Image 1 (cartoon, rainbow, N blue to C red):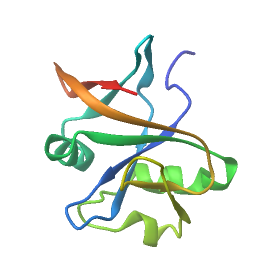
Image 2 (image 1 turned 135 degrees about the vertical axis):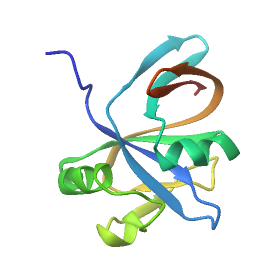
Image 3 (image 1 turned 90 degrees about the vertical axis):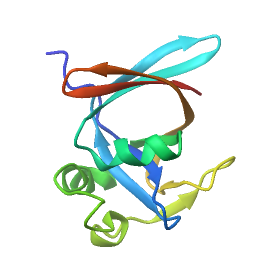
Image 4 (image 1 turned 180 degrees about the vertical axis):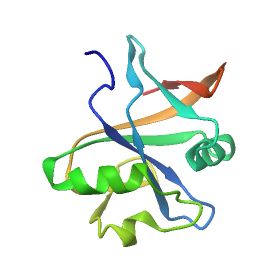
Length: 129
């Protein structure tokens, strides 16, 4: 009954400057002063690789328009495909970062990874918002 949390998209920057999208279910708020979020990525995730180079991320809480894209982004790898193009996702700029996010997002959380923790088959990321 408690898992997964509301499913979101995590937006990270690829080496070519485009945005990678991945479906993210394991995330929560961790602190309000200062603002922090926590999320967990599977050790095989391409987004995990991208975050090891660039600690910046945008968590995008999707609108209903993105339901099919959420499923598609969760079942394919950005290492092999441009998900933005494949799932025809309209993107928009996010203030304070080069990372773009889906236009149909209801909430965007721009954050920077400040700590990682090995969590067996996942890696936990603590982020400053």
